[in-house]
Image (tube, rainbow, N blue to C red; front, side, top):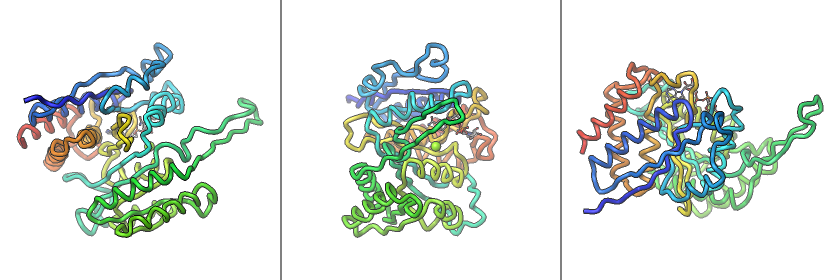
Length: 360
Ligand code: NAI
Ligand code: MG
């Protein structure tokens, strides 16, 4: 029989991004060989801060167009202590998200078997933390508008302009309601700061409540972002799907990852729901210069992101199988140091591959 070929552009980037991308590719190859019916064809792009320091550019001028030829993009992490972070971020990941219309960023969080949440002591049930954060990924506080005048002088003036558009808010709210509706609890919490930010955030709230009328079966509530941090820590079981702006969801999803045990397990999907462009899948963590090159990075966030990619490509059974294998491995105590274990990246990766072969 002919197997379906998924063409993946892989951008390992910097630091531990390189280690965990290699681990993800190994696991994905094991998955396709074991299950059969589909194959991955990877093309690696050496677009990184390392390369930038040598040759002066991250992406070639036709880089964004070349990415459009693939079915999906797998991204490690970008960032180096030798390049200002706003240069690395705005040279690679942010242009990709914008040019490929990846206006949704999905960040699921739950507590994997064998991992310990800092909240476990106040937990009421094993599933007390099971969230999906839906992040607006195209505008808001990361619109890139603004400027600086009188730079390098005591009179320097800078503006950082947030952009909120009716169309941009509406499409993210609709995606969030669909996400909430597809989950058993059908609950959506909207995060805002419309008490202090009285223009963009007020429009954000209004569009949310307008779209809500189309989803009477979804239970809704509204939280100010500062109070949201308190609720995430003290009452995690009260939430399910969460929708927030680019900046708010960026911050809250790091908190969510920490509350689930480690930033090293969390995944992030940058989606173009119209499917006109490839979507991009990456762990939420950065290049972690403090542990780069040591071979100890937790690859679980990379595997979870790979599973989300596989699901987006239509291979639901494979995605479920990959997550099952990861959970069996963490459940057996095979974990990296950030999760309280003593295994390295390679050992966890080999264990997940062996578990995939055992399961199928
Ligand atoms: P980071 O996520 O790289 O690291 C934060 C802390 O978490 C560090 O102590 C690190 O060792 C630990 N950590 C992260 N991932 C881990 C993993 N898989 N296993 C074990 N421990 C892990 O964030 P940081 O330090 O703020 O940023 C470092 C660089 O990464 C910066 O240049 C930043 O701009 C960049 N960055 C890039 C992102 C991306 O490519 N999407 C996202 C976040 C940061
Ligand atoms: Mg972040």
